[in-house]
Image (cartoon, rainbow, N blue to C red; front, side, top):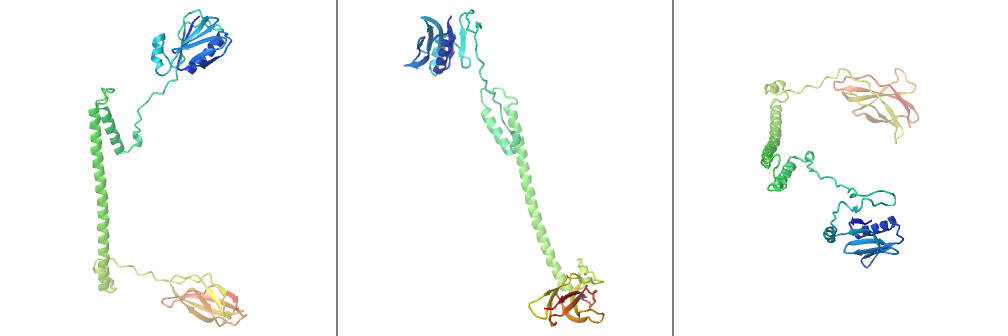
Amino acid sequence: MRLVCAVTDGVCALKFCVRALKFHKCKGTAGVRKGKIVVRRGMVDFFGGIFAVGKGGEVVGMGVAWCGADVPAAQESRGLTKTGGVTMFYDSPTSYFDAGGTYDSVSSPSAKKRPMAKPKLELQRKDFQETLDLVNVILTAMTGNPTFGSPNPTLASTTTLKNTAATKLAAYNSAVAAVATALSDRDVAFENLRAGLTQLAAYVDNIANGDRVKIESAGMPVRNDPDPISELAPVENLTLDFTEFEGALHASWDQVRGAGAYEIQASVDPVTPTSWAFKDISTTITTVLKDFTSGTKMWIRVRAVGGGSERGPWSDPTAKTVP
C-alpha cells in the first residue's frame, strides 16, 4: 500500500508521519533534524518537500508538504491539488487501515467557510447630507469599474436621483433659513411696537391726570379700581412672647386684607366686659407692648382698621404673664 498526503506545512507533515507510524504499527518516533523528518526504528525521509514513511525497507506511506514558495512546485511534482488544509488519497481500492475501513477515493476535510461580504450602507442612520456624500463616493468608485459593468439602476439614473434630492434639500434649507429670519424680524417689530405704545400711554396718563373720560377718549382701556372691602376679617394667630425688657410683651398676628392699621387692647386678669382698655395702634403685624407691671397676667386682643376707618371684629384674646 502507498499513502500520499498533501499538507500545508512541515509541522503537519511531522504529525502525519507520527500517525502513519502508528497506523502501520511501526515502532519508533518522528522528529526534525537538519531539514529532515527522522524516525527511529522506522524510516522517514524528507526531501524536496516530499517525505516517505517506511518499515523494513518497504514504503508504507508517502506525502507532500509545502508552504510559501514551495507550494506550486510541490503541487506540480506530485500532481496534487490543495483543497482546504489537507488532501489525502490512496492508490488502491483494497487498502485498509487497522479499523477495517476501505478508502478508494479522494477524502477532503471540509474547510471552514468565510462569511460572505455584504454591502453596508446604514442609510437609516445617515442624515440627508451624509447620504448625498455617500452617493458621490459610490458613483465615483463605480464609474468605469470593470467589475460592475451593468449597474442596476444605471449610474445615470442614480445620478439623477441624487441631483433631485440635493436640489430639494437646498430648497428646504433655504426655506428654513428664511423662516428663522422672518421670526426674528417679527419679534423685533413687535418689541418696538410695544415700547411705542407704552410711551404713548404714559403721555395720555400725564395729560388726562387721572380723568377716566379723557383716557377713554384716547381709545385706551382704563385700569379697574380695586374692589372695595365690604367687611374686614378678624385677626388670626395672635401670639405673645417675652422680650428683653421688663414690663413688655412682643405681639404678632396674621395680616388682614384691606387693613391699613391694627388696634390693640389689653386687659388685666380676670377679664370682664369693662376691663378692656386701648393699648396701641400698629401699622405693622408685629409690635412691642410696654408699660405693663412685671408679674401681672395680661390679656391682649387685636382688630383690623380699614382705610375708611371701618373696623373688623376683635381677635380671640391671648394671655401672657409679663416678665
